Picture 1 (cartoon, rainbow, N blue to C red):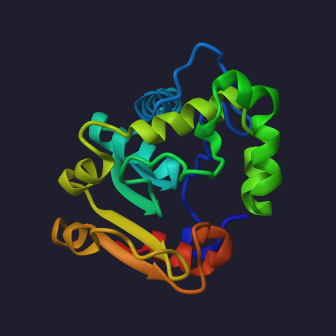
Picture 2: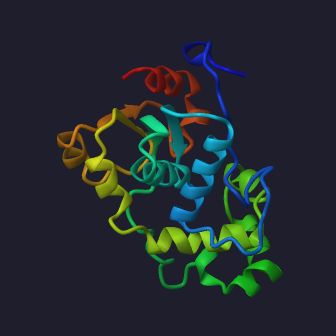
Length: 208
């Protein structure tokens, strides 16, 4: 279903490799840059240029790298709580995806994580390949050089970044705004902004 503010546009919904309905190639590295390259190839195959690209969480980081690497493909970015900095490892005593080796994660680590996360994350995580999820998590730990935060600040295109009012405050918000990034707080929303408040998300995705 398309929300009214976003109706009347050609829309491509893309599952990153290893996630959702996309292929799960065993020889793919699943770093942020690799996902961006694959997304660029998908847009090339669809004959798309100058797209308004919407990315959430890791997808936001991928979208930023895509816009930096392939400016011909991206005319505007709409980001929902994107990953802007390398993700730290789990705290001592905590269990996360990167707590396991890839073999351990495939054996039963993924099942352990699924049992401890909330239902929304579990619903999407269960559709990912274990290797894809594990390698992507380590890709987020490694981050990019420069960071996606720096890349975002340097992009010359319109950029909207949404944060949920129920999430932690956005680090470096004033610096992002000084660099021309339009930062918007979405009421009654946490990390999954488009699910928590879809109407506000759609309204802000339309605004420039």
